[in-house]
Length: 181
Image (tube, rainbow, N blue to C red; front, side):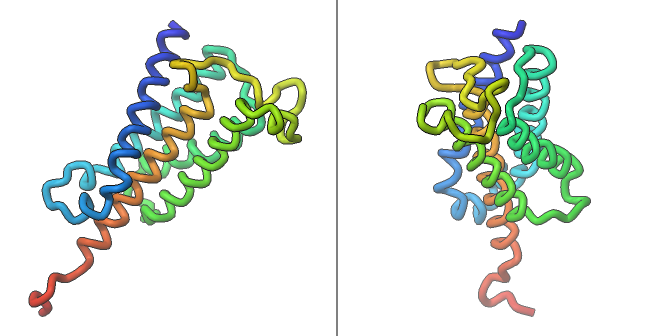
C-alpha cells in the first residue's frame, strides 16, 4: 500500500506542476476570460492541493515511517497553514497575493531541499544533523520525483492559482471604459 500511495502522490505532484507550468504564462488572459472555470475556482483547487499535500506529508511520516528532517518541517510549516487558510476560504479575508507569496517562499525552501538531495556540496550544510540528514532520499519515483520535489510542485501550483485569483480580482475591479456611473 505504501509503494502504491507514494507513486500516486508522485503522479499528483507532476499533475500539479503541469497545471502551474501551463497556467502561469496565461494568468493575465485567464483572469479576464469570463468563461474560465480555472480562474473562478482557483482557490478551491489550491485548497485541494494544499490538503492533499498536508495529508501526504502526514502519510509519509506516520504510515510510511519516513522521519522528517529540519527542512521537511520547514516545508510543513508553510504547507499546513495554507491548507487551513484555503479551507476556511474567503471568510478570513486573506488576500490571494499574500497566499501566492507564502507558497512561493515554501517553493524556494523545497527547491533548496531538492538541491541538497542532489548536489553533494550542499549535503554538507548545517541545516540538518547527521541523525536525519536533509540529503537523505527516502524514495525516488520516475528517476527524479522525491519528497521535496512533490512539495515544490504543490507550492508552485498553489502560488500560480493564487496569482490567477489575484489577477482575476483585479480584472473584476476595473470598471470598463464608458460604463462609469
